[in-house]
Image 1: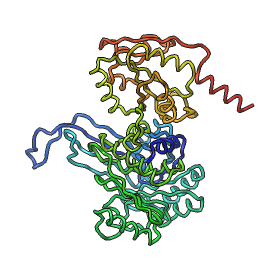
Image 2 (image 1 turned 90 degrees about the vertical axis):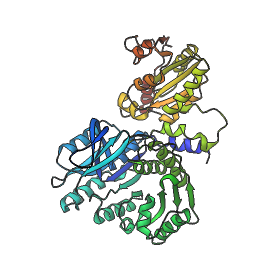
Image 3 (image 1 turned 135 degrees about the vertical axis):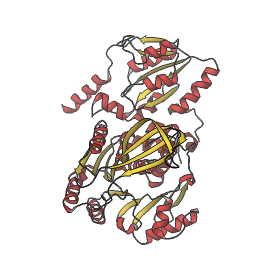
Image 4 (image 1 turned 60 degrees about the vertical axis):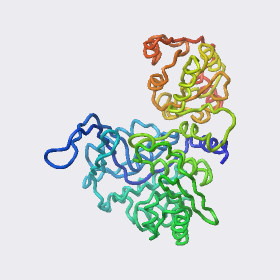
Length: 490
C-alpha cells in the first residue's frame, strides 16, 4: 500500500469529529513487586509501589481519537461517586474530548483494577453493574445522543456489556444515525450480533466472531466464512476482525477479503488495544479513506500500542514512523518515534557525531523558523526537532490551533535540509524528550533566557551547552494567523 496514500489519510485525521457512545470506565493499574506468598492463603503478596488511573472503555476510544489530533464527543453513564469525578477530571484535561455523562445513582462507575508485578498482570478486580439502564436514564442518554449527532462524521458504539448499550438503546441509536446518513462502527460484545443490525462496520476479535457465527474461526478461511455468514444475514456492511498475533482481516461486500499481518514487535500489555483499532478506523473513514486503508493504519496503531504499558494511546507521528516497511521507501525517513530516534542517535554517537535539539509547534513555517533551524544545525553534526502534537498545541495555544495537523507540520519539517529527524511529543514541554535524547546542544530562540529554556539544566548538567539563536524580526506564527483571520473577516 503506497506510503503517500497512508500519510495523506493520516493528515486527514486533524479536526475530524467522532461521536463515541458506550460503556465508559476507569482503568486503574496498581504496580509493585512480589517477593513472597501469603501465609494466609496460597496467593502472592503484592508490595504496592504506585498506582495510576486512566480513562477506559468508551472513554479510551475517545482518548485515542484525541491523541491522534481529532475531536471526540463522548456519551456514557457513570455513578454518583468519586470514581466518576476522577474520570471526568482526567477527560477535562483533554481539550479535544467533549464529555456528556448521564449520572445514574443506582449503579457504580465501572472500574477495572489491574494488579501488576514486575510487568506481569497477576489479578484484575472489577467494580461494576451490568444491569440494564432504567427507562429515565435511557431517555437521557438518547436525548444526549440526538443533541450532538449532527456535528459528528462517524459514530462509534463501544460495547463492553456493562448495560449501557441495551438492545433498545442500540437499536434506537443505529436507526437515528442511519436516518442522518452517518457511518456507524460497533466494537461488539454481545454474542448475538443481530443486536447491531444496520451498523456500517463491526470490529469483533476472533473469539467474538466465533461466538457469533457458531464455528471455529482460527484459520483465515474460517474467519472469512464466519464473517460472510453475518454479512449474508444483513447484520452490517463490513467486518474488521482482529486476530491477535495473526493480525486482522477485512471482509466486506463482493470479493473483499484482505488479511493484514500483525506488525507488533513486542507485546507488553493488550489493555485497550481494541479501542485503538476502532478509533483509528473511525478516523480513517472520517478522513474519506477506504476501509482497507483505514484498517492498515489501525493495524499499525495496534502494533504500537501493545508495546506500551497500561491503557495507552498512539499518535499519528508514531504511526508515520512505522510506515516505512509498508511503503518500501528508498529515500531516508525523517519522522521517528521516540524509540526509533533513540536507536538513530546511538548510531550517530558511535560515529562520533554531536547532536543538537530544538523544539516548537512550527505551525506555519516561516523564515524565522528556517533561520532557527539552520543555526541549530550549524551548532552540531545532526539536528533532532521535537514537534508539539496537535493535542499539546491546543492546550498551549487554544482550540483554534494548530492551523496544520501534526502530520502536515512534521512532513514540512522533514523536508527542510537542515533537519535530520523529527519526533512528535504530546506533553506540553519537551523535557521527557530532552532527558531521553541527552543532546549535546540545546537550541532555542533569543526571546528566551538560559533560565527559562526547558531542559537547559539537564543538558548543562551532562556537559552539554545551550545556544540562544538570533531571531529574524517581523516573523511570528501568531501574528500571521491574526492577519489571515482579519483578511478573511474583511
